[in-house]
Image (tube, rainbow, N blue to C red; front, side, top):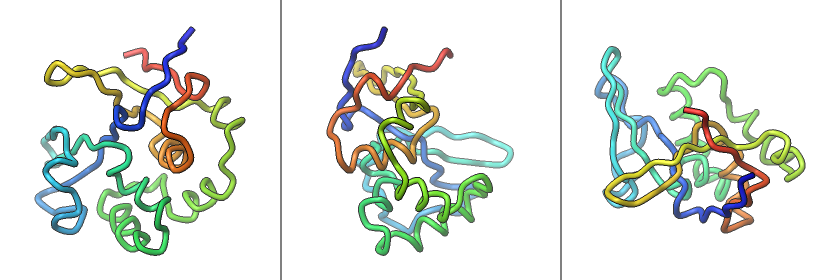
Length: 148
């Protein structure tokens, strides 16, 4: 059984930064310190940034819905995330509760990078963005590790 509490500063999200040389965020949205490292894929060309959950557009949106709604909406369009939309996210924010998070745990992957361990979100970026507005550490009841 997992009993590890994980600090928000050790949890990272994989965020699409570019698709076919088109930036998904305004210039300087992420600082060089925000992006731990990047991963690229070909056909179509995509560049992903591994960023701390608190630097993600999801967390920034939850923390300031009015200030980040245009950037978040644009990200959804450019990233072609058809299974996500701003109304669903707003509903998740409004109806978020820990009992549901315990039933529908976040999935994390343990990663070593430059001799340090961090945890990448496999599933649950939206839920963690809401969770970390109120809490500093992720309790073991609310996550599990990926099988792969």
